[in-house]
Image 1 (cartoon, rainbow, N blue to C red):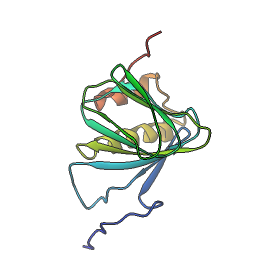
Image 2: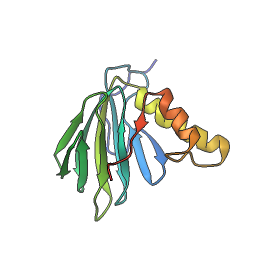
Image 3: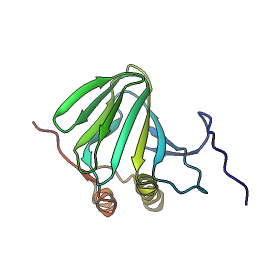
Image 4: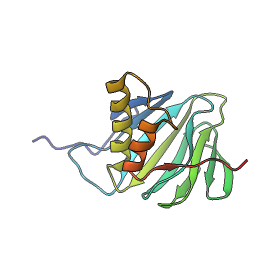
Amino acid sequence: MAQASGFFGADEGRTIRIGSIDLTFMNPTSIQGDYSICVSSGPPGSGAGLHRHPYDEWHVVIEGRFEGQVGDEVRILGPGEAMFAPGGTIHGLKNLGPGVGRQMGITSPAGVFEAFITEIVDAQVDSGNPAKAGSSSFRDIAAKYGVEFVQAPS
């Protein structure tokens, strides 16, 4: 069995497209660890709406400007800035533009976020319809992984 490299280039890893966002998972499949690393890029307005899940999550902005929310606190984040959402905390992140934004998500434990995204994409392929947030298939898959999307206060 070949040994996995400890280095990843910007275009290396397994990329999955969900909606308008590209997610590149940078964990070697031969290494099991405590953390998953995912670089995402998407157009203005893209991102994750308010949600919570049982695992911890870091987001580090690489390029662009993002609005981040953790609990009731909202901040604008630029390159090099980060946010941390402990498991169970409501949070969200949205690209403010004007161009494509890139950020790195680090989740713990490893594998849960990848499995969630993979199952969402597989459901889209199998049905021929996107499993959009709010649809019953999306909610069912999200619930399986402990992910709950919440409405923003009016």
